[in-house]
Amino acid sequence: MSDHSFTSNSRVAVVGLGKIGLPLAAQYASRGLTVIGADTDPAVVNTVNRGLSHVGGEPGLDDLVRDAVTAGRLRATVDTTAATRDADVIVVIVPVKVYEDGRVDFSSIDHVTAEVGRGLRPGVLVIYETTLPVGTTRNRLARELAEASGLAAGRDFAVAFSPERVYSGRVFRDLRRYPKIVGGIDAASGCAAEAFYRVALEFDAELPEPRVWVVGTVEAAEFTKLVETTYRDVNIALANQFARFADAWQIDVDEVVSAANSQPFSHVHRPGVGVGGHCIPVYPLFLLNDDRAGESQSLARMARLENDDMADYGVQRIDRALGGLAGQSVLILGYSYRENVREDYLSTTKRLVPALSERGARVLVHDPHYSAAELIERGVAPYDLTRPEPVDGIVLQALHREYRDLDFRMFPRCRVVLDGRNAIDPATVESAGLAYIGIGRGNGSNHPRLRGSL
Image 1 (cartoon, rainbow, N blue to C red):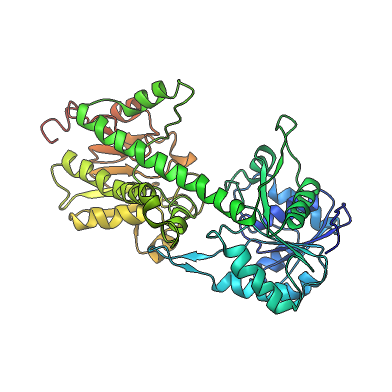
Image 2 (image 1 turned 60 degrees about the vertical axis):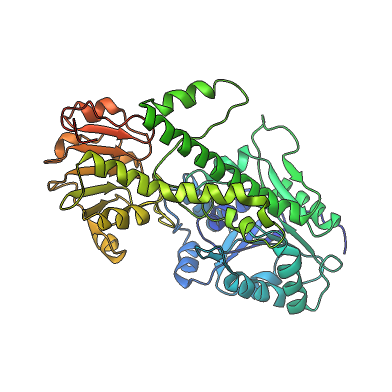
């Protein structure tokens, strides 16, 4: 395989134009590269070719897509193989489905890999950015590329893995601020990926070298992403255990964590009613279901159980606060798994709703990112904030910006607010005459509306 060098004249195919793929395509085009994006959804392709973004809530993306399409540096197609034939670099970022038991459905990425392979030419670099179990890039995807192309991975084309390390809603900022981790199936593939990202990305001036961080193997790069996400999951589980202890002793865990973290070796995260999204509750399962791990990942397994149990813990607290949930109406604020995004994958609300319902509560849900019809379609009863009906309790699940200045006096009959993210100033709730309950912030038993209930 020949040495790789990349310039602003290089051609890049981005396979998968979702919430991360389209920003990546726009980023590469902003660096002068010619980019063709491939996606199976014709509506997405048509939208991009009109110079528009179908991904909302990503600062700067609309302008970058418009400018790139206008300048002729970005176009889209549903034909992945055709996009591959024109490319010097192929970046694949399509989702893999993960079931709750940790099984991975590779069907989508296998299909895309076969399509990429059919158009693969000698000398091309293929990079996977989809988070994968360790060993998948080399033992599965590189082999599929070779089978589909008739070429030899490592000899005729380069293969690397580079985990995405960005957060929806701040993709471009994160691309600039964090080192880009890469690992190849061989040294030449790793070097090729390093050379590409040095051209395709722009880093903040204060970010020290190595800005593109080449690890020793493709497996090390895959493992890096799993370590990052599992660390966060375990850390949050520890914070949740601290919160339960704080509740038992009527101590404010947020005050304690802030004090503890003033020491430079302490980095305790914040507790909450659960962990959702595509990353933190999912990728630890790649470790837990690895046959080579054995019991070495028992801590990660306990963390998963702890974090999944926090929704029920929160429900127990509001149940005690109201003296039972049977016949009570409870409003959940936030269907998305986190604030200010329209993403509900493994949202904690999906655990809160059945936990409340099983105790006899009538559950209502509001989220500014979803219409009433969309919430009904997802199996929950919508709540109209413009015409507030009486509720007995409120659970803040995601602090969308629309909730930051919420006047809790607007809710007839409500007695208690469970702050599932410890994100609200208790005084704001209590000044409205309601009791405030946080996660690990004491149980509010001195509030006159709840005295004797807890």
